[in-house]
Image (cartoon, rainbow, N blue to C red; front, top):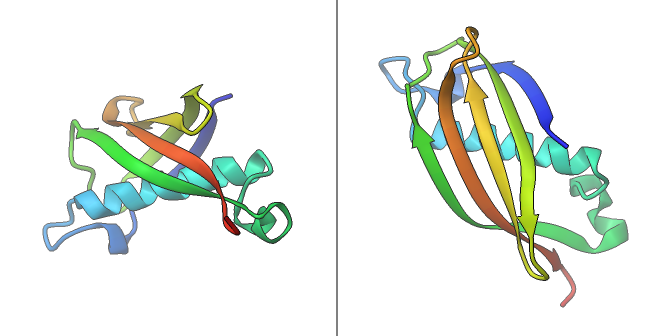
Length: 115
């Protein structure tokens, strides 16, 4: 299932030239991953009940074009594959003209917070 979220680049995500920073892009992607996890019942609110939490193991990000402050974007994410211990999550960031500006893959593991 592809999860899609439309947003704008806010001031906390850009540098002095109004360009999105690497840290800003990662924060936007991570936020959308959390929203997707929430919608699937494995979000932050469920941790006290499930005792499970996602831990991010790595990033592979390719920024094709630096977004600017207040630019409208669509972020899409989906789970690609899973093993017994980890899953891959892909991302695509599109500008207002539906052109790719970023692609990324992350690796996550679902961890019992008690053990």
